[in-house]
Image (cartoon, rainbow, N blue to C red; front, side, top):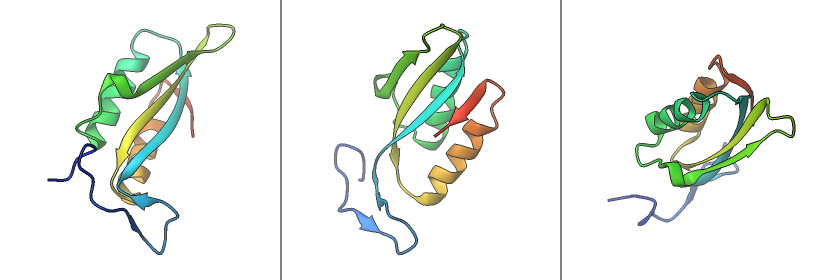
Length: 98
């Protein structure tokens, strides 16, 4: 079984510079409201079922109005990453996704 603990050898696709599967950081910035982090974690879990809260890095903006998250997901394909970026970017609480 393939998992973050027992990954297969990376495979580089000719149309990607990323060797899948791998850990991949996605940065998300949004409103500093109570629901922001739980909603971003829930979205990440839709695309990475083993995603856990321990794989989130959190930073508040200097004024406290925004919250920056780094979601370290287990990326398995370009399609998975593209779909996750679209889901995050279209979320109403998200201002920026990198």
